[in-house]
Image (spheres, rainbow, N blue to C red):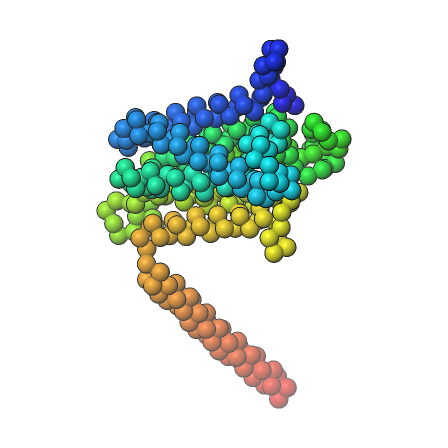
Length: 302
């Protein structure tokens, strides 16, 4: 591991800081590119990226402090000291970023789901790069394992490199969002009866895929916080997956009453056809057994 990239006298360059800058740069580039394609002004794009990023960092830090309050106490200096007590909780940052992004869209009269579709595409790439930096910095590690483990700084036993699960997971999410952006408007199940599909497909797909990825990572990471005796990572994963799938359904414009009627008719039809098949089969079996019994009785008479 290389938590410190290099030092020049009193100046220390941390590896995670470098990767964080790379993540911000490449994520902003993707958002800028997609934003220009959606006819957003460059000034609005960069201003929004900065504000949402800062609000996300604040939300991530506050959430981490609340969940690990015994490490911080009522010391504001520790709250803002990322070097002495590092730590961020991404989901708090996600909530903070979404809230501020929604406020910005309201004030500037922008379409929120169009902007959020663009944002999550760049965000997923940023997260892949950021978690690669986390690996080299030695935090975000997994459980102690006997096989496929690495010895990280501060530990004596091998630990599973859970950061790689995040890296490959977010890389796949980014590729999916990048590729499907040009195609989802033609999905019949999502477009429904409308001429053109609604935006928000990428945003809610990101949430659903993030839930699946979090559930996968939870298998390799020792839980630190429990909610009703369930690891909070699992609760968050299920919530994100449900929110993503529910959002996709709502944005698709489908009606629950119609889909419910179709499902009921399908199940009812399958049920009726199954009963008919069973009745026909039983009648045939009775006829077959009847004929066989008759033949055997005739043989006995002879």
